[in-house]
Structure formats: C-alpha cells, structure tokens
Image 1 (cartoon, rainbow, N blue to C red):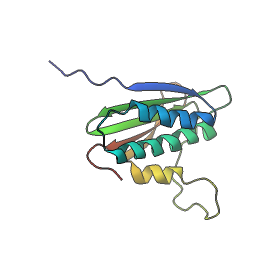
Image 2 (cartoon, rainbow, N blue to C red):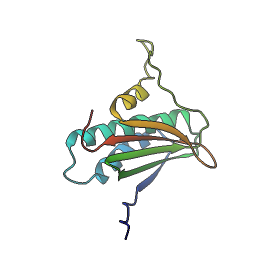
Image 3 (cartoon, rainbow, N blue to C red):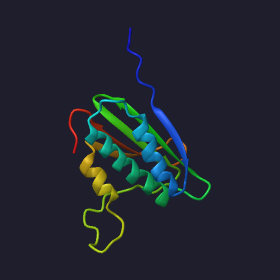
Image 4 (cartoon, helix red, strand yellow):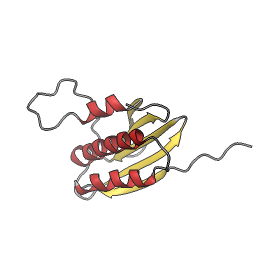
Length: 136
C-alpha cells in the first residue's frame, strides 16, 4: 500500500507589504520541532524575498499571494504564486547603489533548486527547495 504523502500547508495573503511578515511568521509556525535552526532561518528569508517580489511585481491592489509549504524528497518546498505574467530572473550584477534587486540572488544562493512555473490559468509560481540534510 502506498504511503500517504504530507498534505501541503497553504496560505493566502492580500497583495500588501504587511503580508511579507505575516507569511514569514506563518512558515516559522508551521515548521515541526527539531528541524535544524538554520533551515528555519533560510526558509524565512526565502519566504520574505518571494512574497515581497510577488507583492511588488506580480499583483494589483485586490489580488492575493498564495504560499504553499511542504516536505518531500528530502527537501522543504516553498511555492509563492501570484497572478502576474512577468518571469522573475536573477540580476547577477545589480548596481551597488540599488536599494532592491538582490532578492533572487539570495534565493539562488540558499535554495538547492528554484524555478518559475506558469500556472494553468493565470499567473506563475516561484518554487524553491531547501535540502533537509544540508543548508546554506
């Protein structure tokens, strides 16, 4: 008989900057006791960066950002979805005086793997995986 997989945890937040902290807190509260502290820190950072990008670049005032967290295949997976059509990309050389533009560099450095996946009807999901056995 197959093993029943873990059901992902799903949240929806308004497309507002205040949702970034709420999303990070929700992820921290959902993680099980006993995970390496560094994994929780890194998941929090990735959550902040991806939700910030979704709010800033992928939504309008009445939209929502969806956040999904689940463990599978030796990783913790985080997906942040928004209705926007743009495809986020890493800027490997942001100007030194730029006040933003480094979030995906952080995600790229922390995640074992990440990708932008189109949603079937509208928008996209940015999915990042952090290995359970190693971090950063």
